[in-house]
Length: 97
Image (cartoon, rainbow, N blue to C red; front, side):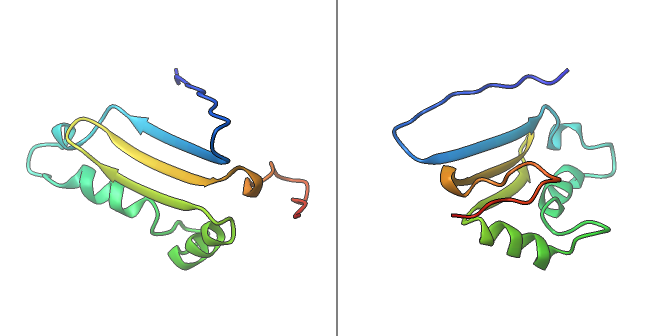
């Protein structure tokens, strides 16, 4: 299952999301050292349907930042944006202020 932790803090108008998995460099297969690190670095570099430039442009249009990487025991993707710039769920169009 997935554990979700919600920690509201109304002091700052920010949304932060961290997605972590308990698998990092210590889980690299024998003879494949660096696999977790490379995978973590590639997570924001594009997909089969969106290139790195398109992803970066969409993140920037939200005034957001995104990062990904792998440590010894975990891997993560982190996103931060202002709460007034959060994307709305698809498929309906997102209203903009």
